[in-house]
Image 1 (cartoon, rainbow, N blue to C red):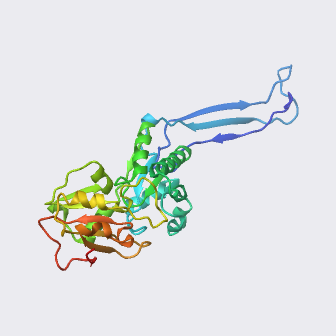
Image 2: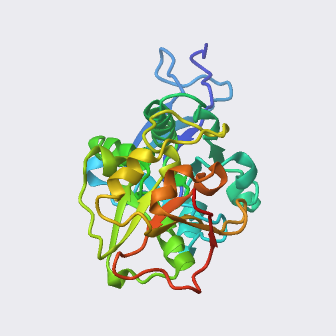
Image 3: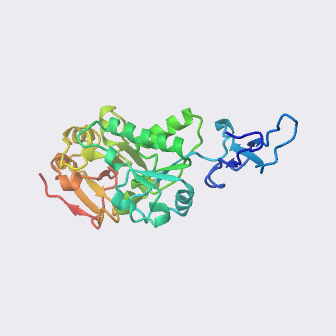
Length: 326
């Protein structure tokens, strides 16, 4: 304890500021509190003759008010179909500024990042549990991202493809972040729609309908046979259970039967899997609609189903291989 002739010398200075002035709150609206300690006076009103330490405690805190945020706390980003070569310059700039990068990419893929980004990466791939409800997996992953954004913003959620094209985690994060009053920014990225159009050499100006395969059938959504149709996630058709490591094959008969209401049985469609650095070369497998349910696992896994316009058959020189009739 300090005596009347002695005081404790302590200096305390704290400053809570954003991680990067471009992508987080600027160092404004700083409140300061200052306290001075000692020396204490003796009864005569004079300080003692011993050495006296004069100290100031200075506390400097930046007040963060969500209602006045000018920069995002959470970024929803896409790694593209072929990571890392599909990352944009804008994405790299934002990832550099973020304090944490949460991703559903495996840790081995994230190791291709340079050290300044790799050290900030957190792979949430282990949270995607096999043979578990996909919605439960998505909620756990989204909660992990929210926790990171609370602890040390700004945070990036980097998912495969485009952040808001058929990505349930991004949808949860967008809704929950806005509900908390956060600024959440969606960053453009290369999606499978982009790469598949390139693989099949189709111009969507001629008409394009895009659905999730299960949703198309379950909701009896309309199709326009004169337009091309792209059906995402046929490998997960009619299943709400995750199948990440097992060779599970869906029953595509209900999808086939629904499509037969709009197209002839001999109409050719293609299972398309785009090229990626880690996934290998592109694969396009053409098959008659009537035989679609018998397509092998290798053709369906990780693919999107492309159904050309009924009034414009695929050209003889089209890319890909033809499966034999069932």
